[in-house]
Length: 102
Image 1 (cartoon, rainbow, N blue to C red):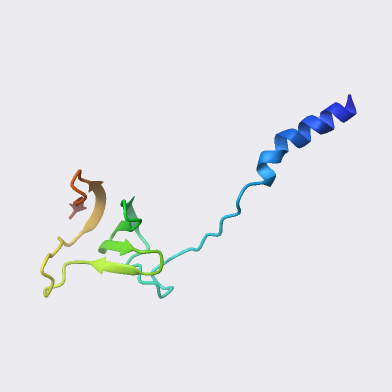
Image 2: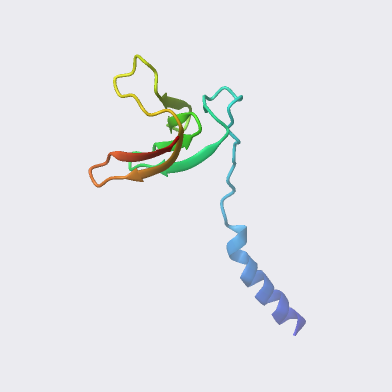
C-alpha cells in the first residue's frame, strides 16, 4: 500500500517537475526603462508583440526593452488628450481606440 501511494504521488508531481521557470522584472518609473507613471490603468498586447500601456501620464508602447511615450506634447502631430488613459480597445483594422478620464 505504501509503495502504491509513493508511485501515485510521484506520478501526480511529474508534470510540475518539467515546468519552465519564468523570470520576472519589476519595471517602474525610476528604473531608467522609461515607464512614465507607476499608475497603470490598462494594458494590451497587439499582434506584433508590442505591449501598450495606459497610465496616468498617457499612452506608452513597450517593445521588450524600453518604453516609447505617445503624449500630448505641443510638437506632436497626433496629440493625445491630457488625463488618465483608462481603456485600450483593439479595432478590427489593427488600430487602437483609447478612452481617457479627465
